[in-house]
Image (cartoon, rainbow, N blue to C red; front, side, top):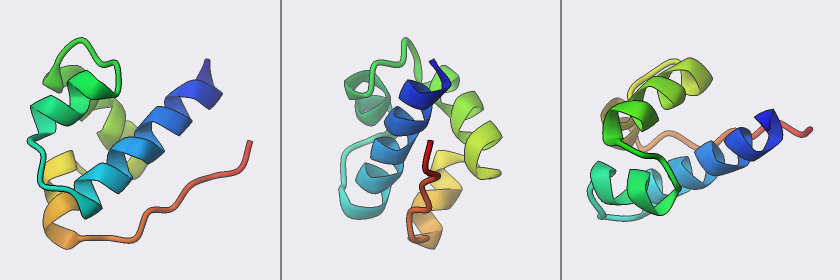
Length: 65
């Protein structure tokens, strides 16, 4: 399960960095029940909110399993 969550969060990060979809649309497409669920998981994984990540246009760092 942690592998799949890491994969989903990596894809979310790429879409936040490269796309213009809303965070809610990205959350739904990534399989999160709500935007708040994505926000919590994203903050635990990346140390910042999805909106802060998008504003910073930070490079996506993924961890190998």
